[in-house]
Image (cartoon, rainbow, N blue to C red; front, top):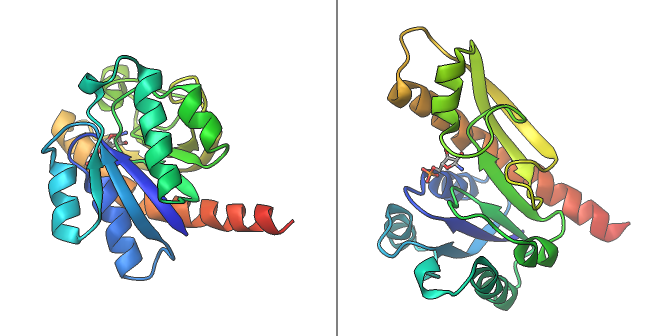
Length: 194
Ligand code: GRF
Protein backbone atom coordinates (compact mmCIF):
# COMPACT_ATOMS: atom_id res chain seq x y z
CA UNK A 1 0.00 0.00 0.00
CA UNK A 2 1.64 3.19 -1.20
CA UNK A 3 0.84 6.01 1.23
CA UNK A 4 1.34 9.74 1.34
CA UNK A 5 1.32 11.43 4.75
CA UNK A 6 0.74 15.07 5.71
CA UNK A 7 1.94 16.63 8.97
CA UNK A 8 2.36 20.14 10.38
CA UNK A 9 4.03 19.83 13.75
CA UNK A 10 5.28 17.17 16.07
CA UNK A 11 4.72 14.17 13.79
CA UNK A 12 4.30 11.50 16.45
CA UNK A 13 1.43 9.93 14.50
CA UNK A 14 3.58 9.90 11.38
CA UNK A 15 6.27 8.08 13.36
CA UNK A 16 3.68 5.62 14.70
CA UNK A 17 2.81 4.74 11.10
CA UNK A 18 6.48 4.22 10.24
CA UNK A 19 6.97 2.01 13.31
CA UNK A 20 3.87 -0.04 12.48
CA UNK A 21 5.26 -0.59 8.98
CA UNK A 22 8.66 -1.58 10.39
CA UNK A 23 7.14 -4.18 12.70
CA UNK A 24 4.81 -5.52 9.98
CA UNK A 25 1.59 -4.38 11.67
CA UNK A 26 0.87 -2.31 8.60
CA UNK A 27 1.64 -3.68 5.15
CA UNK A 28 2.47 -0.39 3.47
CA UNK A 29 5.18 2.09 2.66
CA UNK A 30 5.23 5.84 2.92
CA UNK A 31 6.57 7.20 -0.32
CA UNK A 32 6.38 10.85 0.75
CA UNK A 33 5.73 13.00 3.82
CA UNK A 34 4.52 16.53 3.10
CA UNK A 35 4.94 19.18 5.79
CA UNK A 36 3.83 22.82 5.64
CA UNK A 37 6.15 24.14 8.33
CA UNK A 38 9.87 24.10 7.48
CA UNK A 39 11.97 22.45 10.21
CA UNK A 40 8.97 21.08 12.06
CA UNK A 41 9.62 18.07 14.28
CA UNK A 42 7.80 15.84 11.76
CA UNK A 43 10.36 16.69 9.06
CA UNK A 44 13.22 15.90 11.44
CA UNK A 45 11.61 12.56 12.24
CA UNK A 46 11.33 11.83 8.51
CA UNK A 47 15.02 12.48 8.09
CA UNK A 48 15.90 10.23 11.02
CA UNK A 49 13.53 7.48 9.81
CA UNK A 50 14.64 7.69 6.17
CA UNK A 51 11.29 8.77 4.75
CA UNK A 52 11.38 11.27 1.85
CA UNK A 53 9.94 14.61 2.93
CA UNK A 54 8.93 17.71 1.01
CA UNK A 55 7.93 21.11 2.33
CA UNK A 56 4.92 22.88 0.90
CA UNK A 57 4.95 26.03 3.00
CA UNK A 58 1.40 27.43 3.02
CA UNK A 59 2.84 30.95 3.32
CA UNK A 60 4.20 30.60 -0.20
CA UNK A 61 0.79 29.93 -1.77
CA UNK A 62 -1.84 32.51 -2.62
CA UNK A 63 -4.77 30.38 -1.43
CA UNK A 64 -5.74 27.11 0.20
CA UNK A 65 -6.60 25.81 -3.26
CA UNK A 66 -3.12 26.56 -4.63
CA UNK A 67 -1.53 24.74 -1.69
CA UNK A 68 -3.82 21.76 -2.26
CA UNK A 69 -2.93 21.70 -5.96
CA UNK A 70 0.72 21.34 -4.98
CA UNK A 71 -0.19 18.51 -2.59
CA UNK A 72 -2.15 16.69 -5.31
CA UNK A 73 0.77 17.05 -7.71
CA UNK A 74 3.25 15.68 -5.19
CA UNK A 75 1.06 12.73 -4.24
CA UNK A 76 0.21 11.98 -7.86
CA UNK A 77 3.90 12.05 -8.79
CA UNK A 78 4.50 9.46 -6.08
CA UNK A 79 1.51 7.39 -7.26
CA UNK A 80 0.12 7.14 -3.73
CA UNK A 81 -3.01 5.03 -3.22
CA UNK A 82 -4.14 6.85 -0.11
CA UNK A 83 -3.23 9.90 1.98
CA UNK A 84 -3.13 10.23 5.76
CA UNK A 85 -3.49 13.62 7.43
CA UNK A 86 -1.48 12.96 10.60
CA UNK A 87 -1.75 16.29 12.38
CA UNK A 88 -2.24 18.55 9.35
CA UNK A 89 -3.25 21.90 10.79
CA UNK A 90 -4.61 23.49 7.62
CA UNK A 91 -8.16 23.33 6.30
CA UNK A 92 -8.18 21.29 3.09
CA UNK A 93 -10.30 22.09 0.05
CA UNK A 94 -12.32 19.98 -2.41
CA UNK A 95 -9.26 20.05 -4.67
CA UNK A 96 -7.40 17.63 -2.43
CA UNK A 97 -10.51 15.73 -1.35
CA UNK A 98 -11.70 15.11 -4.91
CA UNK A 99 -8.26 13.87 -5.97
CA UNK A 100 -8.47 11.06 -3.38
CA UNK A 101 -12.14 10.14 -3.05
CA UNK A 102 -12.61 8.05 0.13
CA UNK A 103 -8.83 7.79 0.27
CA UNK A 104 -8.02 10.80 2.41
CA UNK A 105 -7.90 9.98 6.13
CA UNK A 106 -7.68 12.26 9.15
CA UNK A 107 -7.11 11.63 12.84
CA UNK A 108 -8.78 13.82 15.45
CA UNK A 109 -8.33 13.77 19.23
CA UNK A 110 -11.97 13.36 20.28
CA UNK A 111 -14.84 10.95 19.90
CA UNK A 112 -16.49 12.59 16.89
CA UNK A 113 -19.00 14.11 16.43
CA UNK A 114 -18.07 15.65 19.79
CA UNK A 115 -15.47 18.42 19.92
CA UNK A 116 -14.70 19.17 16.31
CA UNK A 117 -12.14 21.77 15.36
CA UNK A 118 -9.29 23.25 17.31
CA UNK A 119 -8.24 22.16 20.81
CA UNK A 120 -10.50 19.12 21.10
CA UNK A 121 -8.72 18.16 24.33
CA UNK A 122 -9.47 21.54 25.92
CA UNK A 123 -13.06 21.27 24.75
CA UNK A 124 -13.41 17.83 26.39
CA UNK A 125 -11.97 19.10 29.68
CA UNK A 126 -14.25 22.11 29.64
CA UNK A 127 -17.29 19.93 28.99
CA UNK A 128 -16.27 17.71 31.94
CA UNK A 129 -16.91 14.49 30.03
CA UNK A 130 -15.83 11.25 31.70
CA UNK A 131 -14.71 9.64 28.46
CA UNK A 132 -12.95 11.05 25.44
CA UNK A 133 -10.71 9.47 22.83
CA UNK A 134 -9.73 9.67 19.21
CA UNK A 135 -11.34 9.17 15.82
CA UNK A 136 -10.02 8.24 12.42
CA UNK A 137 -12.31 9.42 9.65
CA UNK A 138 -12.55 10.04 5.94
CA UNK A 139 -12.15 13.69 5.02
CA UNK A 140 -15.06 15.65 3.56
CA UNK A 141 -15.25 19.40 2.95
CA UNK A 142 -16.70 20.07 6.41
CA UNK A 143 -13.95 20.08 9.07
CA UNK A 144 -13.80 16.89 11.21
CA UNK A 145 -17.09 15.73 9.76
CA UNK A 146 -16.54 12.76 7.41
CA UNK A 147 -17.51 9.11 7.96
CA UNK A 148 -15.76 7.60 10.97
CA UNK A 149 -13.59 4.56 10.22
CA UNK A 150 -12.58 3.76 13.81
CA UNK A 151 -12.64 5.23 17.29
CA UNK A 152 -11.03 4.43 20.62
CA UNK A 153 -12.09 5.71 24.02
CA UNK A 154 -9.92 6.80 26.93
CA UNK A 155 -11.03 7.84 30.42
CA UNK A 156 -10.86 11.47 31.51
CA UNK A 157 -9.67 11.55 35.13
CA UNK A 158 -10.68 14.25 37.58
CA UNK A 159 -6.97 14.88 38.12
CA UNK A 160 -6.34 15.46 34.40
CA UNK A 161 -4.95 18.64 32.99
CA UNK A 162 -4.49 19.44 29.30
CA UNK A 163 -1.11 17.76 29.16
CA UNK A 164 -2.05 14.51 30.87
CA UNK A 165 -5.23 14.03 28.83
CA UNK A 166 -3.46 14.91 25.57
CA UNK A 167 -0.81 12.34 26.35
CA UNK A 168 -3.34 9.59 27.09
CA UNK A 169 -5.24 10.33 23.88
CA UNK A 170 -2.06 10.50 21.81
CA UNK A 171 -0.88 7.12 23.06
CA UNK A 172 -4.21 5.73 21.89
CA UNK A 173 -3.90 7.55 18.54
CA UNK A 174 -0.57 5.86 17.91
CA UNK A 175 -2.31 2.48 18.12
CA UNK A 176 -5.54 3.41 16.36
CA UNK A 177 -4.10 5.17 13.32
CA UNK A 178 -1.99 2.28 11.93
CA UNK A 179 -4.83 -0.18 12.53
CA UNK A 180 -7.30 2.10 10.78
CA UNK A 181 -5.01 2.68 7.82
CA UNK A 182 -4.50 -1.08 7.47
CA UNK A 183 -8.27 -1.56 7.47
CA UNK A 184 -8.83 1.23 4.97
CA UNK A 185 -6.11 -0.20 2.74
CA UNK A 186 -7.92 -3.56 2.66
CA UNK A 187 -11.15 -1.82 1.74
CA UNK A 188 -9.44 0.04 -1.09
CA UNK A 189 -7.98 -3.20 -2.41
CA UNK A 190 -11.36 -4.95 -2.23
CA UNK A 191 -13.09 -2.05 -3.95
CA UNK A 192 -10.50 -2.14 -6.73
CA UNK A 193 -11.13 -5.87 -7.28
CA UNK A 194 -14.93 -5.65 -7.38
C1 GRF B 1 -3.01 14.63 16.95
O1 GRF B 1 -3.53 14.74 18.23
C2 GRF B 1 -4.12 14.52 15.93
O2 GRF B 1 -5.27 13.94 16.44
C3 GRF B 1 -4.39 15.95 15.57
O3 GRF B 1 -3.14 16.57 15.62
C4 GRF B 1 -2.29 15.90 16.53
C5 GRF B 1 -1.01 15.62 15.83
O4 GRF B 1 -0.01 15.13 16.68
N1 GRF B 1 -5.05 16.03 14.29
P1 GRF B 1 1.37 14.63 16.08
O5 GRF B 1 1.91 15.76 15.22
O6 GRF B 1 1.11 13.40 15.26
O7 GRF B 1 2.27 14.35 17.24
